[in-house]
Amino acid sequence: MPTKLAIIMRGLPGSGKSYWVEKFITSQGIEQAIHIRQHGLFSTDRYFYQQGQYRFNPQKIGQYHQANLTAFIQALARNEPIVICDNTNIAKWEFMAYEAAAKALGYQVKVVLVGLPGNDQHQQLCAQRNQHQVSLAHIQKMAQLFEE
Image (cartoon, rainbow, N blue to C red):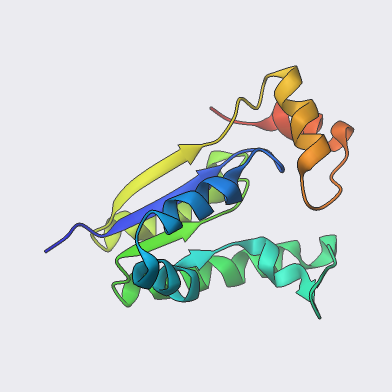
């Protein structure tokens, strides 16, 4: 039986996490790619979309992180072959529950760090290209909090 794989993304907003995920999913072949997008890809960001518009609401972040974790664990429980958490995961505690659940349910866990959070040029690039208008100052603050 093929190994079940859980991928946990880490990186600053705009680092290229979703781009990495898209390249990985595409590499799995068309049928598997469609399946992963529908049943195995989880991002807290998606909860902030209303009528196709991204509307960040700091009051909802805890609730949305919990909903994303719950959906991720449900996918593990369904034995989805590939399950992906596409969040920033700046601190270890932010992805510990994802990792623990995946290991408990027999998944191989791969934590993928995209970019160099401590690098000034990387931070500036992230500020320019992140999709949610996160400022350079906020990205720098996130970089300082980033746990290796």
